[in-house]
Structures are given as C-alpha cells and as structure tokens.
Image (cartoon, rainbow, N blue to C red; front, side):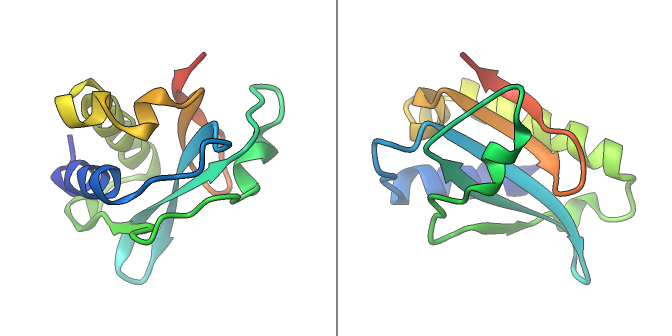
Length: 122
C-alpha cells in the first residue's frame, strides 16, 4: 500500500461531504513533471459498459490531487496495481469503511488514457 494514497484518502474522507447524487468515484492517474499523481472525481452516473462516466467530473474535492512520489521510477502497470491495492486497503479500514467512498455504487482506478479497474462495484 502506498502511504501517500492512504493519508490522502483519509484526509478527503474526513474533510469532504459530497452531494448525495454522486454515486461513483474515480481515482485517476497521470504522470507529471513531479512524477505519478492521483486525483479524485465523482459522477452522478456509473456504467460498466461506458467508461466515459468517469469524465463527467460532477464532483471534485478540495484536496483533489495526490503526488505519488514514493512510486517514482516504476512502470505504469505497477503504479496502477499499487494504487488499486491501496484503495482496497483504505476501503477495508475503519475510516475507509465509514467513508462516502465505501457507500458509493462504484470506485475505480485508472490512467487517463487506459482502462478503469473497478475496486468496488455494485
């Protein structure tokens, strides 16, 4: 688990109160000059067949971005696997299990130009 993701999600879960119409969240990944980064966005729709739901950005938290400096020098697949594992660990923790992310219909992880991995889907 990446400690940066866990700390970031705990902070967002404590500080944010998304509107009730937000049913799905995506943790997007991208590479920047600082290294790999993650961001959180929420949408008022979810579809397993249409990954474009994640581009809706109906909701974004104040602490939208997380720099993943500890994952520098790794390949994108390894970064994605590590973030998926970290999000699963967070959702299984006491803070994560009580968060708006745990109550969501879906939580996904993926690079902006790649496939989304469903960490939680109902």
